[in-house]
Length: 417
Image (cartoon, rainbow, N blue to C red; front, side, top):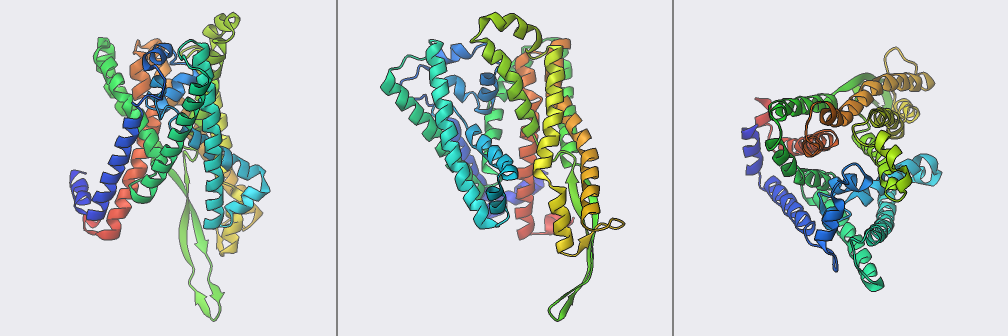
């Protein structure tokens, strides 16, 4: 591992890409500490105390605690992620977007342009909601002119982050948007480590073992796949006959990634947030919809399973895959092309998605179980487990995979030994 990293550092282009990525991430973290104009960061931070189970606590995690300081990058990159998910879902519903998706690079460029426009609109709406919420909670003192300035600053901050993420993707290493979220979550790790050091003896002893086991399980499932054998028949192209061959179609166990966990956590965080505006519902919400309650855990696990199946269906269309196989002369041995192939792929994917959905639900619910039944501190379990580990490990694996491909294009020596 260390020799591989040393060899990667010796490649000039790869070294420049790594340094460029580190520079962009440093700029991002610097901007997360710069407060927006006219904002008292101490008042906002006091308001955020005890907001761990609400939507604000979840968004604060993905912004690297920048939202709790109401900094220039307070919104983080989540408006862009939300806009991307919305456009992905709309391509299934709107035929025009579906046609653009099939037009190749030109169509994807048009969809990316729509995503940027939607990101700016979502960022403006979200910053307006934050400003009014903090104003109503007496955590922000601002007149109309300062309100507009804060909204413009936060919207511009998200636009700059979107640009920085695209720069990382083009000139750096890995996916820029994922790396920005990766850096945000890692920024909360010191607080979790400090809580673990100051925790009880049971937490000090067992938490490192549990965290290691979760990481191993995440890597095992993330890399797990079902390989469907594909056979290609010989074809005549002009006057030449192309040779047939065999390959496989990889179906990942967790094809939906971490998106179902984010969806479920956001939905489950709405009741505690709404309860702040309706005090008469506070007792009911505290009894059923706070992290650690049995009702909360069961409903969160159920939503994760449902969203996993839904998002997998959006990502992988068995009918389109079967049509593409038939178009290029491919078939699954023992399965007729066309409709039977689509039914076979759908059946395999349905069975394969269940363990992936169950795994996501267990990993997401585990921190709450440790807090409730084993006396672990909330800061430790939230910062170093569950959704955080899923995102961090997934992004790290993808980045390492891209670095490995860069190395293989330049030298095969280290990989053939």
